[in-house]
Length: 177
Image 1 (cartoon, rainbow, N blue to C red):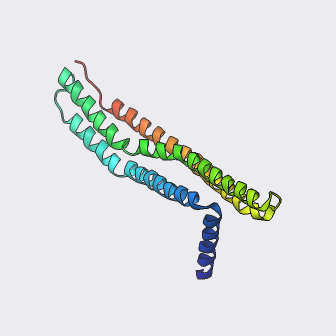
Image 2: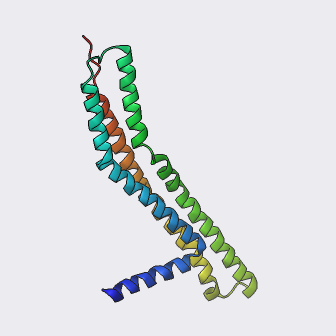
């Protein structure tokens, strides 16, 4: 077990070294993005449910649910829950958008290295250019994988949040007598 962990750690280190410095930036960005995604999932399954329960309890304990002020209070309750639940979604969306752009930066820096090797060696040494090609393709792949997986996670969170807010609006009826 111990040697397997060291082998995995060595393979990851080699992969990161082949991808160049841009790959480290992408890795940190992905760590932040996935931390925010898991935080939102945790929030939706714990604190958000408590907030919904408290809001419903507050609304159902009101005697006035039909006046203009009751309507405004209902709107305020829904807005507060909406702000709380959508808190980090824009940040996640921006991080998803940045992933392929950083991959493109990795492509450009890797290709600059390839062109430099071609200029120095005369353009015919494929072995010398392999390092630059690796630095060009690995960050591109990492950025695209990070973006695609992030799109799925973001869309899941957004649809869950939208569904929960619609259910909240349905559970906070405005009575008309």
